[in-house]
Amino acid sequence: MISKEKLTSAISRLRLMRGFPHADADLIAALAAELRDACADEETLDAAVNAVVRGDDYWPGVYAVRKAAATYRRKREAAADFARAEELRAAHEANCPGFKVSIDERNRVVHCDRCRVSWPGDPCSDYPDRRELSCRRGNTIDVDSIAEAEVLRRGHGWITGTEQWNRTIAEFNASVSRSLAERRSE
Ligand SMILES: [Zn+2]
View 1 (cartoon, rainbow, N blue to C red):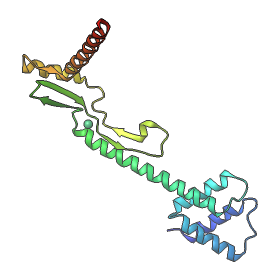
View 2: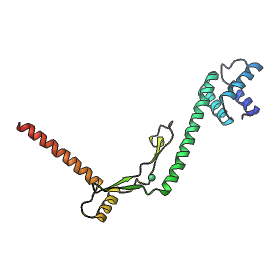
View 3: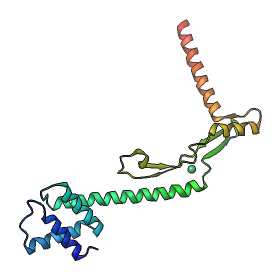
View 4: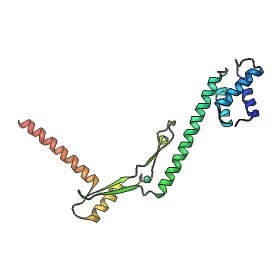
């Protein structure tokens, strides 16, 4: 809701601008109706009028007020989204160990991965760290050591996911070398 006083003072400020049309009662009433329609609340009205009055010397027209109100609304929604994402992250981090161990019984591999859960943050932000919030509990965790400890506990024949990956790469490199050598000897 926007009070009459607030609306009157907003219009007075807009009238300070150069090029504002000679204001009769009809024009003021029409502008008041436009402002009410464009701004859902007094906070938005303040922000929109501030942006317009401080942005230019000349009265830019009603469309500029609508645009400023929409920009403010978007920013406010983005800030609310960000605050919500921060809350969700805090609740998650309170119970998250920061990593997840998964066991591949068939291949005898122990995988340990950092927690990568994330929440959409502020889509309007220019700062990448605000675009998406992710769990920070795993940031300082040495997942390789955890996997290695589990491998030791399980004993002979078990390897870590990292070692499995290294072996796969080594096998791939070896097969590439082999086929190159075969091609050369043909
Ligand atoms: Zn987590």
